[in-house]
Length: 579
Image: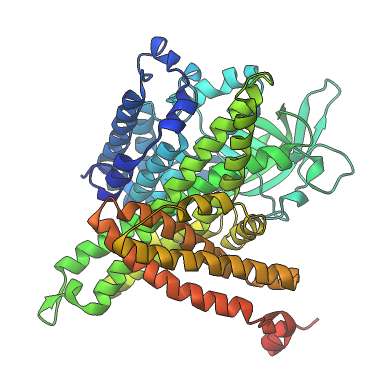
């Protein structure tokens, strides 16, 4: 099989043009760990070479081990019997390969056995794993649980858990959702209390828990008696055992290799992570942001797989005397898919870069002495990148997951009736892609977060830095279109602000989110267009199309058409259930 890193020209392009000096400096400091750990880099070039080698290793495992087993894993699925969940055989073999290559502590510090990789390399790895088997990503990609422990747990807890994550001895789960608390996590009811010995114990039910059979669970629970909102919630570490009972696994549309569990806690023992009352407001928000970048990478990887299968079929399939790739409607579908995949990757990798800068400067801001002459600059950069990461993260999930769903649907269309059959992988890709727009925050919730960032001008400095760049020739003409897109976005945000009606703002949230994604991607493509003739064509195709769509969205936003708000019950009319 192919190596999923070296066979991807666009990932190679992105890797080769990355300037990660600031990211590496924040991650590696003065490269002192090179004297302690033989695999730690001694310089920037050494770090980049190490990153390339690790991604090459991931790509090889994806092509040789994971992808060939994915269809069988989908058919077999995770199995449940009497409270015990068993992974499909292919999943077990894939996890063994990843653990054997020491890839399960991807971003964790070396002192716990991790690789200390930046987020931008992690999302590249997740994308490749997702291209091979999207279901496996939900196990490999849950390393954010270990990252949350690393960020907020005590040193004793870190020493006890993180080395086990790094060796692959344990997997984890983020245990948040309940039957009556889905997206509304403030409504969590699972109760945590301290017994007579001061030990925390938990009672209640959690549902729709991805990899809920994991060994180490991060559980959001209500620790403060009498509270009903997020301020009464805390985060706990809980290990699986007889008092943590898996009642069932869900029978799902897709990602069959990933067990989604209903868990009953019966006086299960837990350990408080960090401080009480900060479970939702601080720790879950951090965990969810990391998970959302991971799901964006999952949508990206599925889209890559679907596009490749559709392209290969279109080249080989002959109808009416010619290959269907030479038919205008088919080539149009394929080009849209290609543009979607490459633009999604540009946004995803930029998001990951900003997240790395955010995490690096936030860590420095927490540790720098007030007397240090760099203290003010460090704190300002931490605040800047925190603001940018807070909007780019939901943007990448919003765009990449919707794009992945659109690309898999179009890929089935290219294959026609064959694409609908289980003889081909595309129906699996479509089923797997569907969940990405739902879990870890629906597309609609991402739009709410994007809109909040736009109203707070979170991207003002990001846009300003790119709009100020000088460009010439055709790229300058494309830049003018992107600036017009950005201005219409600003005018659209100003319009809903002036209207001041929260329901109308919500109604227009997805249109404004689309416009924001298109403007950000437009600027990213302008930078890429100068480095590659191929990227110049991608930029022209995307920007010209997006400019037209932006005008349509802006017209809809400023029309004030609120008929859905005023008349939705009349429109739904006779279909509404009778009281």
